[in-house]
Length: 464
Image 1 (cartoon, one colour):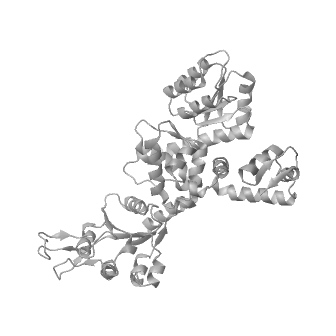
Image 2: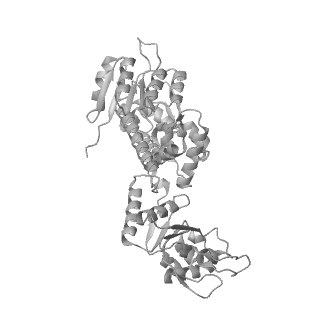
Image 3: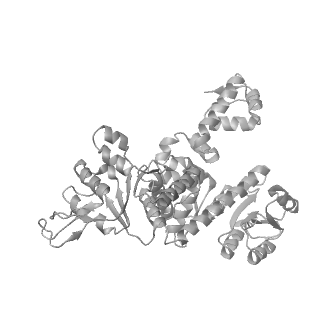
């Protein structure tokens, strides 16, 4: 199936600029260009466009860029608008940003910066499309993301399903989505089968046997009627033992026997029942260490770990963060679907997320619920995620995160430091070594905290 070429519309009263747009973007795009606002709006009404490149100021028209943007969104809200303008009035720029414009690119930017802006917008569109597809598949359990780690996870899931493995162990940090993966395995294996959940850390020791194996009427005080245990209730389906590492050691031996024999003995009777189930256990605990210190039975560990699937933490698949964010926004917002600026998105991708996907979802929900504008910016991230302030301690470093991303700040600083040392502190020579202009060198070095001051002299630099 041939992939549709992205369709781009450029609206600008500068005819020489419009002539350059198809050349700047290159092959692979269908590009329409119009010099007047009315021509551009008519095109939006007549055709579907992925992206509109919009100027803010039209000499022969009193309408503002914001008026045009609102009209475009009233016609097609799914179209991404990138403002490419020479506008410098900060009040107008703030107004435009708050309205929900995808990106702002100064007209004097390099061709690569313009192409990058279009590429980012197309990536965001693809993330939103996949998020909408996941939401539309209500009957399935979505695993969001297309990183190599997620592709491996999907391959592992397919493998255990094909093999018909009866006992599976999921290992992953808190918040990585272990229950979601377990549900996915169960659904893909047989959506008609039951999925019974036991939260091992929440089951009281006195009632654990009844929860697991059931009981007969009169087995103990309060047992007024017979109860079917989780393993019997599965009826050929799946039993999910969440956080099995928290299970008291006294219950582990009884659980081992059920897994080995596929038989249960309800509380209050000596009769055993055959049970049919597949078991998925999950834990954030290092069971190897737990076995060494005597907190987990070695024989039970080998039984449940016949096939182990590792669920990657979010920090190992940061490329999935944008798609996850769009999925959460689409799922919780009713009519209100704010966009996320590239700087804010890079900051969200640069954070380590100790609470993993669960923490990311909570932050996104907070951002959407508290956002009064139609766009989420970098400053909103710092309000919703105070921990980020501790990670990026200086104002200069925080500003740099939005430009480069935290994952490469250290590399960038090291690269500049090496150039400075090699040039013996000479700014001109260091800039030449790095292949950048003196102005660019000074600006980046200052952002990186490598420059304290700048004097009139080309070489009079004081480095930290």
